[in-house]
Length: 594
Image (tube, rainbow, N blue to C red; front, top):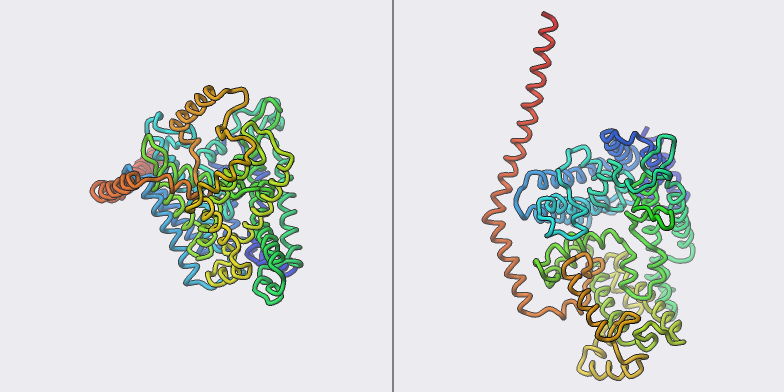
C-alpha cells in the first residue's frame, strides 16, 4: 500500500524538480479536497463519527504518505502534554505553564534540527507542523482558563473563544490533527472547531440556502473552494516556471556581482517574490480544503445574499504584493500568526486597566522570533524589518501630508507618491527577506554586501535626519510643504471641538475593549512603541514579573504535583466505573443462565 503511493510521488518529484517532501505535502493538501467533500456529507449529529473520520484521515496522511513515524511521536507528545496541563493543572498560571511547555518543546526541535540533523530533501521537517500545533494548543489553554473567569473581565474576542467544558480525548485529537491543516495550517481555535463539528457554526444559514433534500447544515462551498484551488495551482505553476529565469543561488555567483547595483536590488525583489510563491500555493490550497469541508465559513451576509468564507484565511497575496508600506504587507502575511501573537501573547501580558507596555512588546517579539526558529537569518530579517517599520511611520507622518490633506483631498502628484512608495517598499522587502531564506549568518551578510547594505544605510540616514540633533528642524522644514498645517485627524462634517470629543470617546472605548488595541505585526515592534515607555513603567512591569515568579515557586509549583494526583484520581474513577459495569454485566449473564 505504501509503495503504491510512494512510487508516483517519487516520479512526480523527478519530473517537476520539486523536493519529494514538498510533493508529499502537496499530495496531502490535494487529497483533502475529496476527503472534505465526504466529511460534509457525514450525518450532522454523529459527532463521534466526524472526529473519528478526521483522526483516521490524518493517520492515513502520516503513515501512508508522509511516513512521519518519529514525527508523529513528536506531535503526540506536544498534544498529550498540553492536554494533561490544561485538564489537570488548576493553578492560575496554567495558561503560562502550558505556553512555556509548548515553546520549550518547539525550541528543542528547532535546536535539534539546526545543530544535530543533516538536511534531507526527501524527509519532512516536523517542526512546521509543530509550529502550527503550538499556536493551537497555547490558545486552547487560554480558552480553558477564560471559561473560569468573570465575563466582564474578558473582551468580546476572548468571550467567543471560551471552552466551558474540557473536551474528551477524541474531539481534542480531532482538533489537534485536523487533516486539512495538519502540516501547513491554517491554525484556528478550539471553539471554532467545536462549533464546526456540532454544526452550530452554521446556525445563521437560511433554510432556503441549505443544500440537499435533507437540508444539510453546511452550505455549498464547492465554487469558492475550487477558486482557491485554481489560485493555488497558479502560484505552483509560477513556482515551477520561475527557476528557469531566477535562482537564489545566482546571488552568490560572479555573474551576479558583475551587474550593476540597480540590477541586483531588483533581482533580490524577484527572488523574494519567488520564495513567497510556495507559501502562497500551499496556504491557498489548504484554505480551499478548509472552505470545502465547512470550517472556513464565517457567516451569512443577508444584504448581499452571500456567504463569507474567510474564517481561516492565512494569506492575501494581492495585498502583500501591492502593499506600499511594511505594516500593510505584514498584516496580509501569515494572518493567523498575527492573531495568535496579539490575542494570546501581547494582550495577555498587559496589566489590568492599562495598555500593553514594555514586557508585552518584548515578549511578543521574542515569542515570534523563537517560534520561527533559532537560525540567525530569522533574527536578521526581524531586526531590520522592525526598524523598517519605524521608517515607514516616519515617512508617512512627514511626507504623506504633502500629497493628501486632513480631509482626504489628494494632490495631482499623489499617484507618483504611491508609485515611489510601492517600489521602495517592495525593493526593501526583497533585501530584508533574503536571510529568512538563506538562514546562515555569513551567507546572509555576504548577500547584503553585494548591494552595499542599502536598506540599513537608508534606515540610519532616516533616523539621523528625523531623530538626530536636527530632527525637529528637518520635520519643520518638510511641514511647510504639507497640504494642510492642521494635522488633527477629523471626520468629515465635524468641527474642531466635535472632533476632539469623538477622539476622546473612541480612546475611552478602546481602553475598555482590548480587541481594538494595536499589536506589533508578526511581533515586530516599532521604535515608536519603545520610545513611549518610561523607566517607571519598565520598573513596575519587571517587579510584576518578579512577583509572578515568586508566586509560581511558592504556590503554583505545588499545584503541578497536585495535577498528577488529579490525573490518577480521574483514571481510577473511570476504571472503577467500568469495573462496576462489567461486574453487573457478568452477574446479569449468570442470572440468565440460572
